[in-house]
Length: 111
Length: 115
Image (tube, rainbow over all chains, first blue to last red):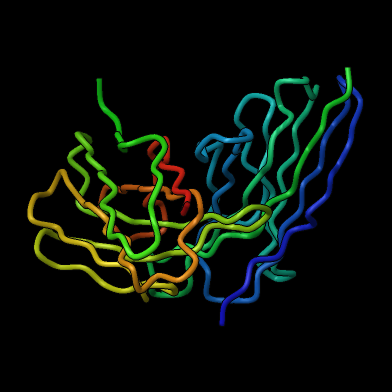
């Protein structure tokens, strides 16, 4: 049973700080990883995906993947109150297109 | 304006009733998915379809049924056999349904409440 684990939080950071969100996964065959943001009462929206070891940057967001240690993280630089949301990590299993989602980490950015 | 639409936004069901949730996409995506989300929980896969007239059960298919008669449409029926259907239902689609960069995009969701 493939698993994706996230710290449920809440994670509180002051405005302007770096928020660091972490995710670990059990299936070594997982090839790619997705980060979604979900505001309360809304549907998830894609922030970014990563499938190569190392860092991938998109604006204020950086995804980091370490396949040897089986973790993926999302860094949010210059955090804004509008970043306050639940962040979901997802990964497909090897040879599968079914995504397994973590339960999400709730982030609060304090003005 | 491309996207995924779900209707209704809110749905109330009485005990013993079947209800159908609509999902339509105009992204020309091959694959479509239905998830269920309970408070404080991640998304759990109910059914998915990679191609018209074919669909597969996900992790929690019991009490649900789907059809895929058109590429654009993937309705979900919540039957009376589903004992605890109150949840947030999310429909998603992706371009191919396979491949490491195949990304799922979500509709706005339907919130179902059993009275």
